[in-house]
Image 1 (cartoon, one colour):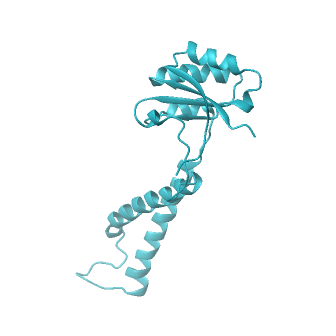
Image 2: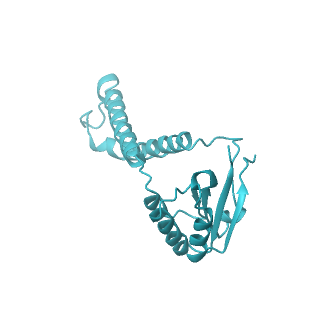
Image 3: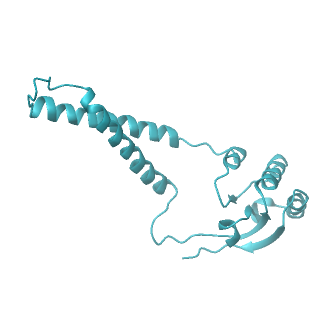
Length: 175
């Protein structure tokens, strides 16, 4: 299996997006895009769909329902305490705690879901094609085996759209 990749390095996200759209329009399959900060247009341009927001909504709904059910059970059914003549099922007293615990539930469940889906765990070997992508460069990667005979064409597209550097590299996992 050929592990060589063609890597294009860009100075800004505008030139990266121009090259990405041009390469996608010509039928080239983009392997990966590395950016120093999130660029949401890249996700849209690559055509990746995510159900992460739906998962977060479900976590929030289940968290809120669970917290409300737990508080209702403890305050009304299991241990009803009559203080100050107030009813035991005073719903407004549950609201603040429900909001806070729901936010905590969504945050933790989303973190674990993202880590599981992205296969991020301590000690995992990572692939970083160009160290500058963590500082200030934008990196576009194409798998050479999937390009077939369009290698020279993709290099010319990357250079014409503003790539600072285009080179070939074998990507190896690092620890």
